[in-house]
Image 1 (cartoon, rainbow, N blue to C red):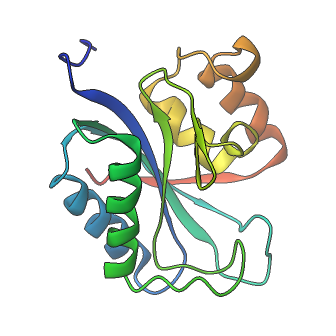
Image 2 (tube, one colour; image 1 turned 60 degrees about the vertical axis):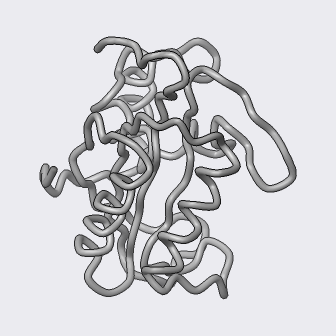
Length: 168
């Protein structure tokens, strides 16, 4: 895949939903992301059990490869607005949500402030993030120099990630 032009950033966004019409919420996120950049590719959607707080419904998860001129802070604020449009409530940490959007990767940059860390700090241990990310960029080097595709295979051994389908 060709590299983005100067001033345009390759960003990978994790998207998840486990409340209401889950696929509808993911579709709204994909449509909303088109307003801040060009969608290069979307992973298939996977269904996974919740992590952290188990007393909730299963999630649908996917990853979107976006090209954007937005800076990390601007993108984070935009994602928060998309979550608000989906009526996301933040009552329980790792709890149920209509829509959860996370910046996973931003070019090859590291970015760390009080409320934003890129790469996403917990993504390397979560199959529900790494498996769809591997569909888009399997040869990218991840934590410890392991390719994302290899990491996805090793994480799938311990955590079930069920393929739902490709919708975009």
